[in-house]
Length: 221
Image 1 (tube, rainbow, N blue to C red):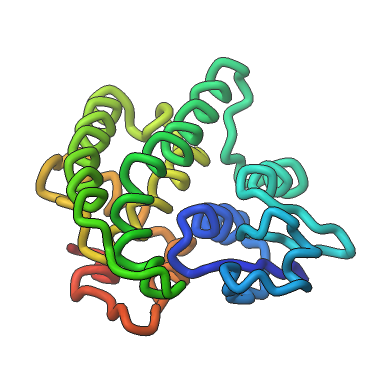
Image 2 (image 1 turned 180 degrees about the vertical axis):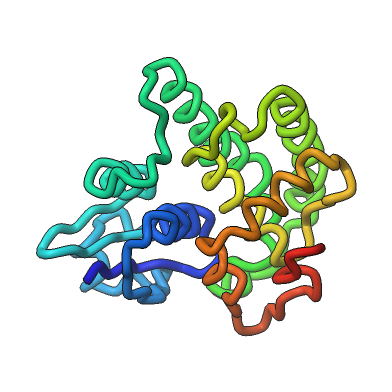
């Protein structure tokens, strides 16, 4: 049995959960309040971040390392293309969402509205929230442009890039910070990926103090 130390609304944890679920890997989820810097958790990952995977005496930290571990050890279904150029595009887009989108949007909206309250760090910074609300429009437009040319974000088949994007957007959707009416392409893409069995546990997440919006788990949103 694999054990994943995670936080429910962490997009990095959600990406790992989606990959594992898509590959039908059974996992025990352990919610970790990483901000408390528990000594046992810090021994697992001195960086003090989630996700962290424990499996048969092996400990792996960092979301992409965990995802690629499962891509190599559970190759079916494949979430990375066999062609080197196509793999490079998938990794580029994963970097786009886990780095650029995270810094410009997720950290400005989700972390300000939710994480600060959970960790007792105070109130949201309105300047950051405004900046995130502005930048997400640019990213949604970029996704719409990609999906105008491709069936999925990185090409004609679903890949780990789609899960990286869906992980961030699903966390933001939990707090109603995604304008799904901005692009029919993006809305249709999210509806497809949201309907996959791998998404079910994410749609069941409940964060105390932050109830789900009515549309969050609605597959016909």
